[in-house]
Image 1 (cartoon, rainbow, N blue to C red):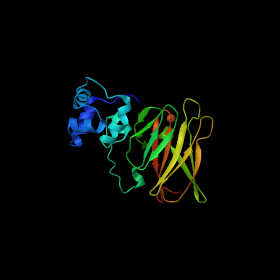
Image 2: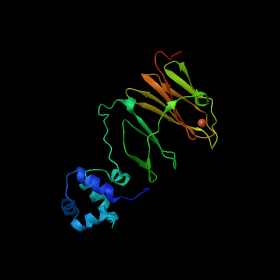
Image 3: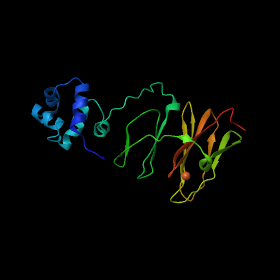
Image 4: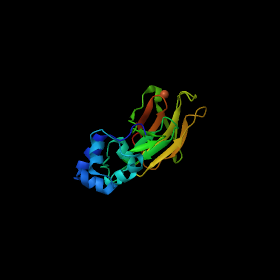
Length: 200
Ligand SMILES: [Fe+2]
């Protein structure tokens, strides 16, 4: 993890749970004084206490270490709120149907913010039978390439992983696709609306 838990975070989460230092201490089999020390920055909880501490505060270890809790308001699971996370270390692509705390290779990943596709990352689409044939006129070198293509509908996401030296193209089932995405390893995530009005 890029940072260890801080006293402020423990205090904030404990107070949000309306627990006293003593009550939290009792759950962890430590003294109230120990909790007080953590919260005032005079000590750290032993690493072996991280899991029980997260459980006592009713959050995940990742949320505890990131110092933030996530409340996903996207309860209807509408895929238009889908979020993409890309690990800059290993290239892993992670999809979530809403807000989440996501970590990979020890890093907490921010959700990528998609921008409308501009000229350099224009997403071209052609209807071929029951598929969209999607291409980009973009470099595919080791240093600069399109790392994935995605097609979003209200039911789900189709994802195609691309690799350097390959081609910047993919095929998606047309079924209710509303948006196409292309992710450049250097410039970020781009989208283009797609649907009956955009179809050729
Ligand atoms: Fe690019």
